[in-house]
Image (cartoon, each protein chain N blue to C red):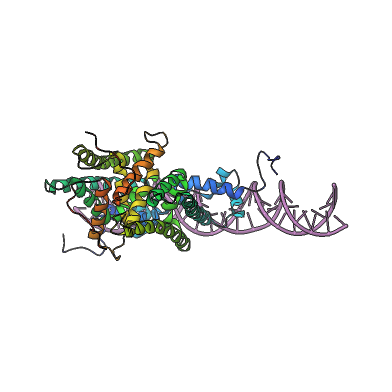
Length: 210
Length: 210
DNA sequence: TGAAAATGAATGATCGTTCATTTATTTTAC
DNA sequence: GTAAAATAAATGAACGATCATTCATTTTCA
């Protein structure tokens, strides 16, 4: 099974390669601007062959978006199980979110740019997952507010504000730039902690040096 | 000008109606998913007629986006001329940005969703305007940091963070919701002020009541 | 009267999808 | 283990629909 892998593994894997090609093209040009023919060409196959793996173009988009949301949420579940008990949960969440969104640029980009190209039924499905993810942060903020650690007037509004702020990072970050991923993580983590007025922040940042 | 308005003002105004129709449709379905025929139908005219006013479909998009950026920047110029001298400039900017973006939903939405559908030349033009606008906030933050009013490690990063946070509002706000525009404005203004650690914030928000 | 605007029809290209057929691969039977 | 049967995947061509754009002609309006 492992020794003999032909130069062109005709057998299967095609569905996976379609997903990869579609993801790349959707991220670059947008769902509506990408044709089935372009995807097929990127895969190296005839257009009709795609229909052995996906019933419609819309299903490719749905698959990509649902897979991303599932992966995002289960990645957080795995991360949360790993973090020490005394860690500030907001800090952990923010850093996780940034790291994840910088790693999975294309998935993230497609998942929040192509919402309007989802048919109503699929829109519902993705929307539900999205709300599940946002609820994670809202709960963190609510608990922090309840224990007087954070100063949050409206946890739902703060959730959207923080997520919008963080999710915007990949739109301007580029690997060659002056700031590395870790520096960006630190800068945003500090911004968020201050925005919710964390009174027990471990790191005091930027003691003003005149 | 106000008394005689025919049922179908065939005369002119067509270019303006094309812009309005295209804006509405682009915002709803995306540039690539909207056809010239749909725009023409919305205007109530044959497809060919649009070409008396715009050379290509791309030019309609370019017009909309450049007009929006110009209007945004000149609206801020007008606003700035109006605000009292002792007003905190960051607070003024944030409130202006929120108000403007909630009013001009469609223009804003199109202008940051359709960037990738601009041909390179037009992308450059819009990108330049965008940087001009961001520079306004960066300068405010720089000056605040220089006078020790704000705590900002990196003004450019903070600019992007704040703008992403604010620009996300229209994507979840809907007029019938539990929060009015003014309340949202206040909540976000507070979030931003705390995020840059404003030490001289006029309003202290949400004294925790147990 | 003359210029601008709109029509209606047409252009060639490309769209998502289908389908009969061929080619690979896997399963079954001996 | 090998031949036959069943299944899966890919091809290549075609479907009707729709795309952005053009243009000769007619209508509208100053």
